[in-house]
Length: 80
Image (cartoon, rainbow, N blue to C red; front, side, top):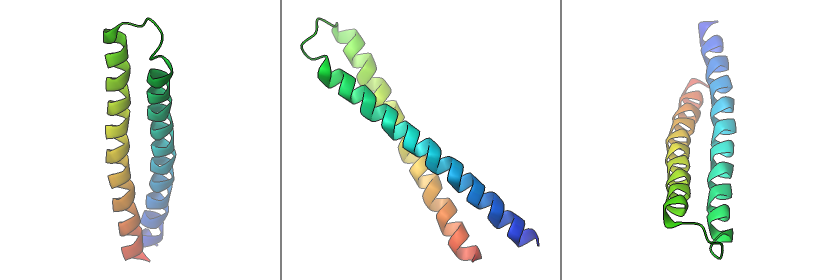
């Protein structure tokens, strides 16, 4: 019984992690796209650097979530 509850909780967390991962990756893509589209605009280098840094941070968070997703998937595989 407890094993079923644990598996249900792991599956729910896995779903949340996958959703968050998709959102972070989309945000990083959007930020990088905005930087690329603004290459011709008179934005200052500080603003452009901040946008690149924000995209890199989103990508780092996405990597951490991907690792968590893999861990959860592995745990679910062990429980099945």
